[in-house]
Amino acid sequence: MSGFRNARPWMVPAGLAALTLLAGCGGPPAYRDWTAGRDVPTIAFDECNEQVDNTMRLRGYPLRPLPETPQYGYRKEIFAQCMRRKGYANE
Image (cartoon, rainbow, N blue to C red; front, side, top):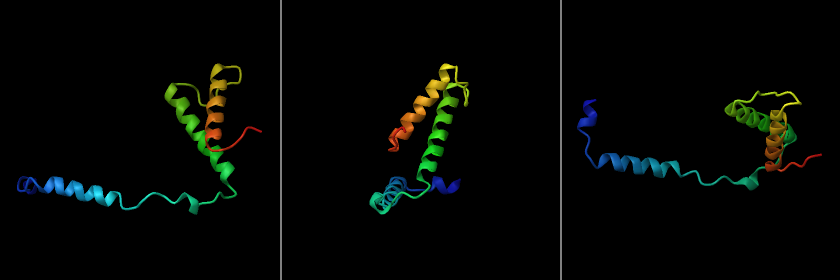
């Protein structure tokens, strides 16, 4: 605790500036270096299921609603939106 009392006022902004510079050194990701693998459809399906589960939980809806409930249509629609965002078309 006594170390903070003896710190110079200019040390805090200088330290924060150094951390900010170091955090940005990685550069943007090179998306062209990546190609889709064989498991991509399964991964996209699992990711969308997880996102839909989180959305349903946040809204207070059951995770696996019965087909005759309005929540079933809601779940189906937000899942379809997620898959479309990932570049998949409905078969």
